Length: 151
Ligand code: FES
Ligand code: FES
Image 1 (spheres, helix red, strand yellow):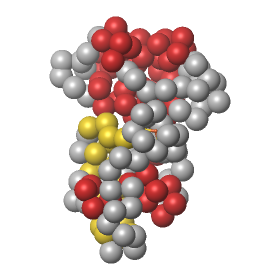
Image 2: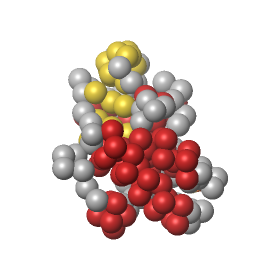
Image 3: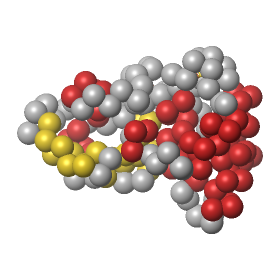
């Protein structure tokens, strides 16, 4: 058994230690908000937080994250500035890649000092198959403004 802390709840999972975290979240814990895209660490669809840092959950095993604090899109508060900005700007098209973008951005915005929207836009390498990058950029700018207001 592997014990994982997911969204502030300790869960006992009967899975081999080399199971990718992504499979454990989706298939064992039924947290389907974290998406499978490439499985090779390239697209960012599967991004979650591990001890507050953005991690592509297809690239780490449950053994590697046991004892750490894992947060998925379901555990990010609804009033988080990134979720609020995404709603305000109506960012998603199909929505498939969006949890990954939101979790990546939320981790970056927790850094001090807060990065600028331009920095975030240039460094964000998640992939959107709908190519909704124009609305994603709007969402990033609004999320940065909302984060600054909160601080
Ligand atoms: S599914 Fe993990 S990075 Fe693409
Ligand atoms: S909104 Fe469809 S894949 Fe990004």
